[in-house]
Length: 50
Image (tube, rainbow, N blue to C red; front, side, top):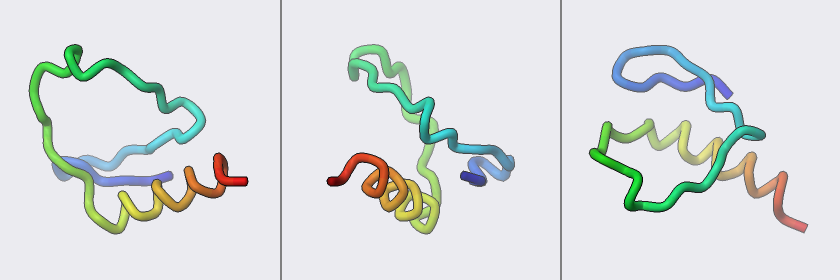
């Protein structure tokens, strides 16, 4: 899924998303656009929802 973060184009690879412990997060880098966040949430819901 294409995305733009900090004015750089990239990809969100939904089948490679992993969970990590919050203690491993050193600093907040920013936020993705709301449209992208909604698209990711919708795609993940389709993958994992019954």
